[in-house]
Image (tube, rainbow, N blue to C red; front, side):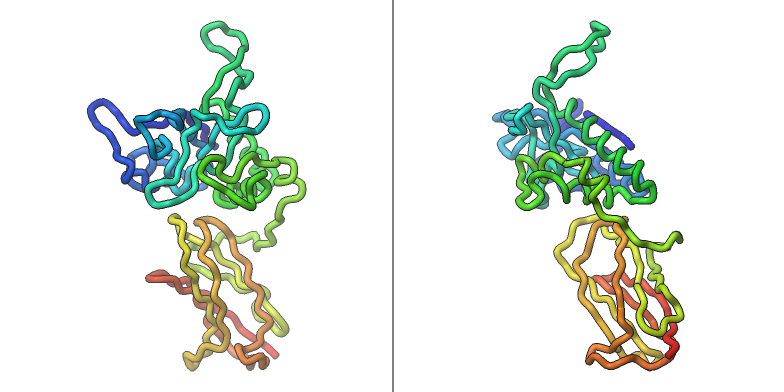
Length: 286
């Protein structure tokens, strides 16, 4: 778990343009994505340039634009977004920040006085969200970063209407932990190209388990197919592509696309999207 206040577009004599805030270009953005793909949640301050006339696009900085970043905006004690809180959309049109927390007149430790006082900034909101994510991860230690972030967003106060000022809003951590989803998934490590079928062999029904490996958000659908040994597709289903690390469970009742029971035999399971294919194999025994 990493919490960082790092945010910039200008460094020394170099400056990133808004078009570079595409989730994968800036060096620190790439670093956050690298960490995300290796199971590390990175909470990133959105920035304090939301009302800076130099940044009419919202003032979001790197690495808050990263695909894998849990970007955090600042609200006051009434839950109203701070004017200074940087925001998206990103250059590729994604909503940022992801979540918000208290970052206006927040009570905090002051290093130079060895005491406590009040301060404002997305840097003070970010550790609160990092702590929330750590609590969710403590409850669900096998969850991927995407699953933790997705769950926090699901129970946030603007989950039904996220926007570029608040993102998904202020998370309800209690609901996320105690009323959130429980993921029924085999206690087995899957490779990125593997689909696990269980039970296998199956007589009545089975479940198809796999992990998504798509770092970039996508509006495309993937096609999940079951193919017999003659190469004929006996069953198929379109599935919205999800974020990398999210585990998917798809039930199959061993009926063909026409509603008839499939015959005993060995079947290939195939998930296809663009140029990427994942495979599994299962046996039906009637």
